[in-house]
Image (cartoon, rainbow, N blue to C red; front, side, top):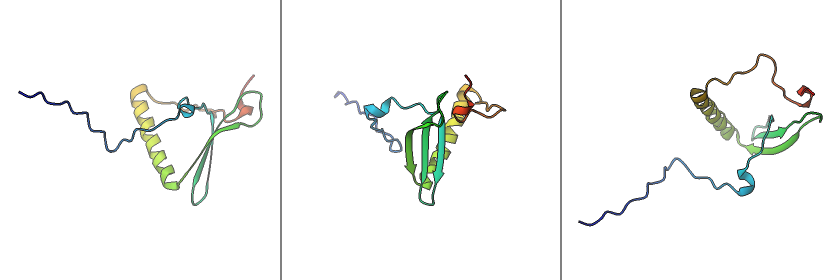
Length: 106
């Protein structure tokens, strides 16, 4: 009886494995986001505000189409729901969340 060769699992056609360069793989922490748009694109600016400094520094800027922005919204919503299903509700405080350096307390 001939031994059958083990087949490698077929990759899921819907999932594409990303190539993440080393300089991107560590990510960047952001605690501020700003979004602007035009008829042709959405611009997502992610930044970091720190105590004792005015304004905030943009860490990353993503420019995309309105279609991709909408798909991102739906994907983010789905993942927040899955997160809450696993870890519990993400509660939004009654008072405003800090949005800039003036909201940090010393």
